[in-house]
Image (cartoon, rainbow, N blue to C red; front, side, top):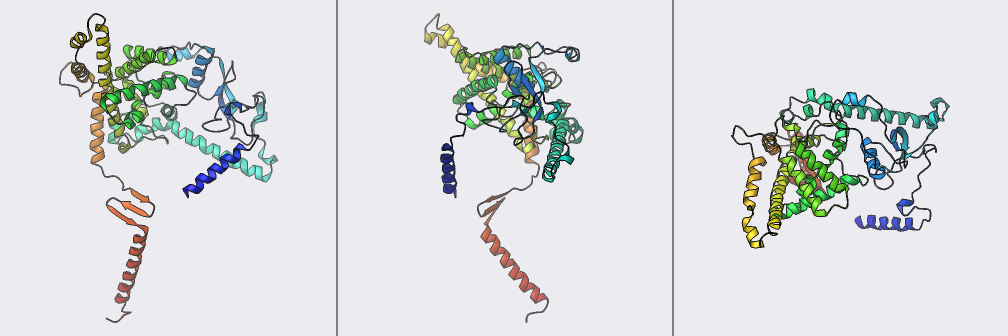
Length: 468
């Protein structure tokens, strides 16, 4: 079967190459003029498009148009975070884009997923015609489309409301009560927050560069401790996207975490290094490493959710349908964060020792410099005692993000391993597995036939249809 599919696929590819009217390469795709009518064969145009005044670029998210204007047109955002948000939002702001634009796209993902404007200046001409003037088939299609739109609006509304209502509906659950996700994210748009955890798109240049740097740092840290690569790749940099994207949101739409002055300085330094391609790679990697360590080296004085790392983990607890991730699927994230944090601490200690040796080498020989530097063990121990273990009994000790993560993971694993879960049936080919029972469909069929035969004989005996 697999060979047939491959052969068919290759034949289809070869046939497509022979069609002269196909567009190749993709950069030659023609996008309609903004004044043209919406394309009927595509999905209905969206009404929340945002168009750039300078180059007619169209998207549907404010943070994307902001990033585009900064990168392509050197636009400077005059909005300063903090202060009285309502007072600052009262006056009309001058921005280089237009909202409420009708837009469509050819494909929902991959190549050709770029939005383009349609129906400019047509006004009511873009609205659907009166159903009574349509043909019966068109009326049926219109009714189906209206039902789909209404259902989509209901689903969207329920997702937007989920964080506000689940605080009362699900708070009695001991796990949700312990982590406090609903309380931390109360009043925020669940769909918008979860979108920050989606894979990075190709048009997110700065975020893509930041992730590339962090991936390199994680690979270097993994080489120091010889950890499995899948752990670092899956969870190591998953918090970078929520941090970057929520920084672009207004204060009333983003999670209420707070960066310390040191964290803010290191974040800005890392973001600038990632944005400027002329920055040496070693300097970019050091900026990314120091930023990640600063998120761990944080004394929590106002509560654990003031930390950006713990806040990002709360956002990662939102499911696609707007609910909360089950405890059985979430404690592994805490374990991965702990493992990656240990890697980064050791890696930073190695980098700091190497830099100190290089500095001392300017004044003395290498062997003498290696004898004068602080040992790797002392560096790692100092970091571990400061922010990598459970809070000590010292009266002046403050809680750290790692202390909260370790404690919460322990609580979650206690619930996970002491709570019965629903059984899972695995079906591979004709073999079925359930817990310790394994059998084939043929064996199941034979067992059922034997059961029927024995039942028929027993019933015949009980009803005295056979001689004893």
